[in-house]
Length: 606
Ligand code: AGP
Image 1 (tube, helix red, strand yellow):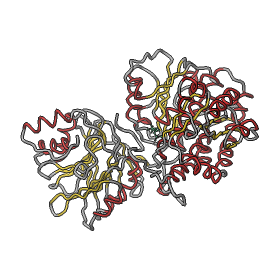
Image 2 (cartoon, protein in one colour):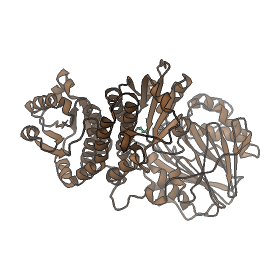
Image 3 (cartoon, rainbow, N blue to C red):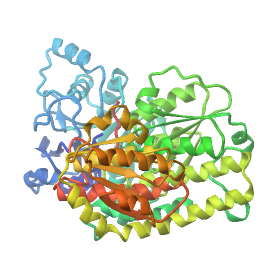
């Protein structure tokens, strides 16, 4: 949940760290700090809050060796003292850390018994003091001594004032990427921070340690054996990380969706045979045909995409499918019978709970396919195959284009599985025709932005909402409500429409609007009845329905009409309306849309 950046090389201004932090700030922004070696001493600059606060305290110091950090607080309040980098008690070693040292209390007590004085509330401080304990004259060796002592998922980078041209990093579960430049090297928790310097990267694996100097990269495995690893090329170009003319990354990424959905479909279907193909999926059709059950594991928005995929896979491909919340599933003792296929959905490919669930399922012999947006991510490297979203970097903390491209990839996967089993070529072609029309339909919805903004500005006054829908619209309700929670800080509940009468309807009144998602035609009549029940309790009704819906026009307070599509594809277009609605509510309420309070883009802690 934190952003790490480290640099060794000729760009000696400490401001190079600020640029790096800007690219990883979305991973956590409670506080930020840098440490660097200046005239044989360690210097640190730290600030609570956004990067702009750190920028104010940065001088024009220069140093060929810098480490930097943006924090999402886990252990210790959000204070300057607890801001990383964290130093050892002798101020000789500085550490930046992403993850959690689960056994830090025990380690801290042992060190205190040895006379070490602690100054912060962080778990990270034990890393700095342990390195100091084992340090003689080799920082790399000291880090290698410390690493096996730590439990929990972590990645950290350390510098020592006696070694002004090197950084040493260790990976134990959280991501660390090495940027291999010309006479400069970078370490970062995310490739976004590297691409401005170089596109050549090396992805560290768990248990590995790396030492970087301006002209060298030394890699070691957990047994301290020197290793060499492939230098990979980053897929994106630097401009993909800009927000263009949009006010927020989130709005840009909402508008990216037509093209992102087209990219997700590119060369992944055969019109003539009405099916889908995934060339990069190294799993034989015969093995896919042998699948008897699918388990989907995911978190947050990705879990909502998983629920929709679960409906599709059972209804269209006729495969029994269980959809599980990663953070719950990982503590179960799952039964993984022969023929079980796992779909692990994760935009970042780094969500700790989803990775843990995947590892448990692989330990039980399951085949795992990742549905992921980040090449080189932990999920993409540990799955047996990965279907990439091709959505481009998603910087806004709230997931938008990742969600709709997840649904696109999952729809294609469902089509492929269904055509392997039973649906006809014609049925497959009809499905594909509807899917190919989706980007254009999203463009039509985006052209309604002004009208949606006007409605949002009316509804932004309310602090409580219900989203109601049935079947494919129930998970879509969960997703729409999550958007409103995340970026507008509104208490929005996504609910199965049929469940409202079992209690929640007691909460409806003129101050609690109902967003009625009426784009699931199989259950349309029933949802209209639920809308009438909400209306009878004076709840303002904002309906989302297909164009030409005369019934909703009569009973809804306001209505947003979208182009008609199949029930199983309606979540994609309906979600775009919900995204725009949440965005404009957040804007009206003056919320920090790209970096909502208390959140971070990638939840790499458990
Ligand atoms: C969604 O808007 C949130 N940012 C969050 O729920 C997110 O979907 C969740 O943390 C899962 O992330 P992942 O897809 O990278 O695994």
